[in-house]
Image (cartoon, rainbow over all chains, first blue to last red; front, side):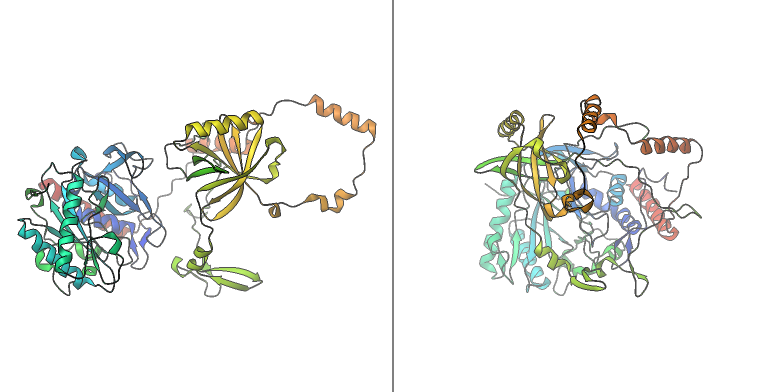
Length: 287
Length: 268
């Protein structure tokens, strides 16, 4: 019945992947189909890493960096030696709707992407400020740090984009022009975090302080080759079926509730807060 | 099944375990790959009326209702109907920790080890340790020895044997002594009589006449072969195709979503 619409052969559509909300695989695929136009624009030419939950989110899932056995020939892949795995990996590259549907059919609930493209894999075109609170720091504190960070970047003439992590944190993304190294972007994020510690007592810039109750850690470490971030519009494997959702800056304010962005609500948002992101690739002043 | 395929060792896949063989102060980094592939015939249960596959459900015997995964605990039956209950965390805490080591305690003659203790074999491959691996392999091969030691795999500690096999080192997990019954206690065996000389001579002759080289390829699973032929016949004639009943509502919504998104992507 789906023959003319997709190359993917669906399996176990009735399988319940989110038991608490009784969300089936069919609904997960439908979600990804609905957000595909916005999501694919961000995934283009970018290796992805999956977290798959074939038995549903309450069973153990597994990370998959390598294209699994039985990957159809029409799925694009990218071969690259990965330092973290110490071997050559065949990453999946999700450049079209069929590939995204195929991933969803694999119960790849979480889709993570690299911060660089396949054609310039060693040079990032995205910078990630991963804002991660440690209880009792709540979302208001996260928002506070995000706004501080935004202001700091504005002073440098830079305009970041925000998204929820789908869990407790918030991600600020800065699209940049080609040519920087990961070392430079990582150092850039680290440096700004360090400066912010002078302006706010709750900000932590070092991993060693990140576990202290009440701090909000600005994690710079994902800005490395082969490391990934949760893709905008990816579902998270939590009972509430939350989504890592791109935001308008107007929405980043106190009493903001990230848990409201879920599989069922995000598809109803017509607006694309990250529209024009790729036309806004920015220059850094770094050493 | 009709085409007799040899099980392939998928070396490129992620190893199931990696660590090192330690012999005293010497280390040989290795990874473990599956090398035993069960090839029995397996059937699924179907409902006779419409050939739909049957699924298993865990049913509470008191409520007679299926129980959700998150509502399941584990109980150890201490006496009939009496359980000591464990939750996941408690069991997790008790698991032995894998220290990524195969500790070799001593070396024994491989031929002196008894197959009744053999559990399952895994292929050991060098993990950027070609020289040390080759050295251990060659030495064991030359001496006809095997290393005896321990490994923790997943959640269980096993005694193991490390021995050469066709140019590789193989790790075979072993049964604990208490898992294997000791037949010497059996009354039936205790009353066995000594055979007389003539009978024994005849028996020895028969055994010598039938002696040969061990060749596992001489043996085939005839049931599996026969079922293979039957499957082929059935596939030509009376194949039973079961369409999985997808809940129509969900499938319909998915289809509408697909149509709409395809349209949207085309407009771009």
